[in-house]
Length: 551
Image (cartoon, rainbow, N blue to C red; front, side, top):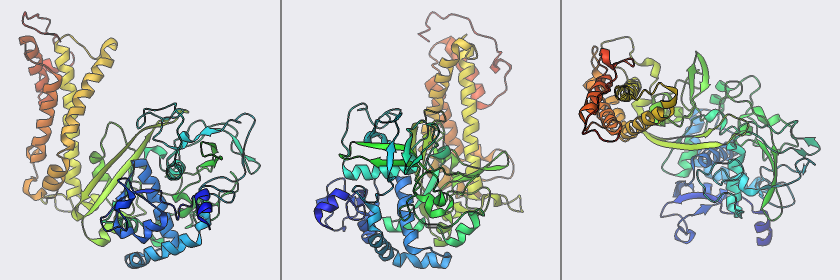
């Protein structure tokens, strides 16, 4: 293939497009500039010299699934635990051989087969206008896409080929549902209406987790699942399968890959065809994928019990991921109803502390679905924390619970104190004849309470790992008592009270006598003291102080 043809096709195996952080010993690292990119071939050939991916949370979910899919296809496995331990030494060479063999499948452009694009996609009369390429990127404001990462919405932007490749992979894995155009895909309409579902990476705002290694190749290896493990999570129709680029679907009826592990890793959720000039594209609905619990379990999600039924752990904009760590970092087995990411099993096999990346794409649920936010956190997990959470107290109630259970108790203490904080702010304002329960005051009251809660949780987030995880949970025998509220007396309990008191001070001024009386009533509620006048029906202080400032 000539250089001109390579440029025209932009082959993802050869061309640099993956955003990464390079180690100092990477070949020609300095010549790659401050924001280096590598090709797929380089990602495996020099994977030991690449520190990590450099991308947004939703892009990491997509790129990790792509790299894992390539690795598992190249290995056709691993078969079992022993094979997983041994395969790291041959992972790079087999992945490069696989990419060389399948190179023609990874052309972004050109007249032949294209990577993750629908051949013979034609517009209908109703949707005869192509979509701007901005629509493929979730970080660019276009249509209903949020301006969260972009303040230049409405302007026409030319994406580079590397940016297009990133956008296409991410769009197929993490695009939100909602209204979408209808097209004819190889003679078959892409739908009866313009509705579409969230793609697998964004479905149900599920929390995804990936183990991080010392290098990119180490990270990819740590997140491979074995065929033996897959058999434990597969339904009767679930197959190991093949990636969609090996046998691209011919149209919407070609659903063979939808129930296979490799076919779902990089889904064909949207029918896309990039037009000449790379400024516009035809975009329509693609294949439909069932999501857990109806479909195959995604290996990277956390499963929890809700009303005794297993569901994917959902991320929330008002709840940081450290508050769910006890659920995320508990491995009970691949076929259990509640467990963290399946690859936590690999961390247990390695028997050493690992970093765990967690993140999610938060989406709306309406027909005009869009990304609300993308969140991520990285946790350094001690091996003892990856215990079975069900073995919390064991058979001897006189013994200290395990770290996971202690962490759970610490989070519960903080959540209980947060409820007290909201109640305390309510009581304070009620004493000042400012009843938040009244309709005309409810919106303002919620805002004031949320500001206090935000300050409280932000302060605790900085202390959760060093105090709750590293000190109290990992040294529970030092603080645990069989009786009494020992958690409140622990270093974490003191941090919780300090954060709550600071947030209450912030939200409730107390410079006048009248404010001081209201402050004292609210402070009693914050401490959990039961006082008659602290109830929502408490007597309102209508007194007027000459020295009172603006409230």
